[in-house]
Image (cartoon, rainbow, N blue to C red; front, side, top):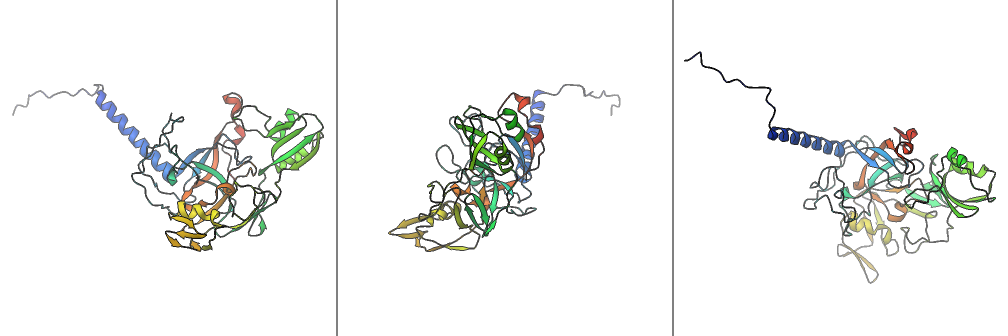
Length: 383
């Protein structure tokens, strides 16, 4: 044995090869994507608010932290999908391309949560009417996210009378920032901008994409979206000569409101209506079928047809139906500027995404970047 044999010296200062660098970066990116997927699926999700349907509690431009733990994480139902993309590929707005495949679609399953949905909870859910570019409904977990307030639970009886909500024959709790629309007539003077700013009313912006709290109908008439606190302040303004909440008469039927064929319901006069609950049966007839059609067909996967005045479910004559899931009635706090369960019906339990906890960022659509930041809303708890 040659003990004097020279050993090969390894140069630890030698720079890594391009292959090694790419391998390290790929591994780090894969790990980050996996962790982001786990966090997004099981723990929290970020959500940007696109519409004013929850104002003044939740504003357009708010970014919310949504907890999956409160109501229980829902496991993915469409597992073949690009990570961190909800339902379309980026930069395909003009001709949207789905970011998922329907090759594998799993049944609904939810892990246990910290709590159950209660009346008054703000909830993020998949919008039941969400469709892709071809006009087909997205898979449940790929439907667009909406945020509304749950006003009625399974088996509850809800009703709206002259704009006031009743649940189980009792007046529902009114939140301080719940908003309605008002017709306001002045003496011809315009509202002072400082006054509007003081009470939190945004001045009119002619940009079609802008969210407005005040719209001039004619020289001395305005249409205003106000909370009760704001409405009280406007009513006390010396230039106001007449003010009235814009409540539709109960004799006016709105055809875009979901309802039996024999009723006269509208946004302000709706129901009474019992919210479907798992295991509960309802009598069916041609009059009330519009209320339950989406549940029977789309949400619970049955075939449905009517023929010669009779109803057929899965090719069998039916005069009743037993629900397989629980359902919820969701409404926006901005009662007169919200497309909600009054228009597209109940939200199935498998569409529930999570509970928004707080605003982590908020900016408006007016002014430059720093002027647009709503500093007073950062970390604001959602109630």
